Figure 1 (cartoon, rainbow, N blue to C red):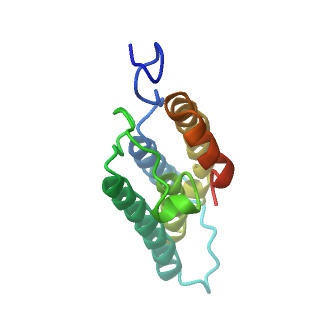
Figure 2 (cartoon, rainbow, N blue to C red; figure 1 turned 45 degrees about the vertical axis):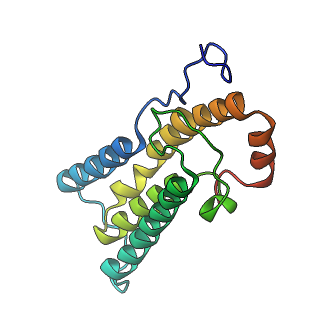
Figure 3 (spheres, rainbow, N blue to C red; figure 1 turned 90 degrees about the vertical axis):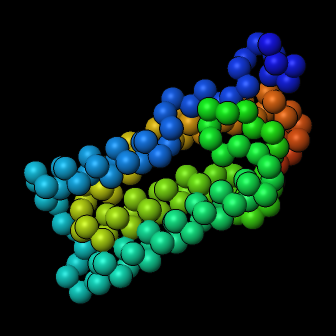
Length: 160
């Protein structure tokens, strides 16, 4: 029994590790694209450049968020206990910069590969992250940190 979370285990209980969901979305999108291509990027758009920039922006956001976690001395892995509410770095602007970075990465890949499938799979990826990961993380953080988390949650948006 954990004092701060009652009988609940000291972790979020997310339904899937987000990187696994992301890789499954990318892999599934590329397989579907191979079987039935659905290009969507206009010919005049330099897809590799535009998509690459968006992907790199997402990666940079993800790395900035991970560094912020490390500096705060808390776990980034969802199956381990969280020891602090991170409010520095990108967490000043969004409560979920890692997932936002993943969304941007998937959008960037969809443009680089000119695959509407990758963009379509952003919808189930978002739903899994939003309801199977973020909702559980938020409930866990509220149980564990109480008013400290509620004040942070009231001040900082879930997404951008």
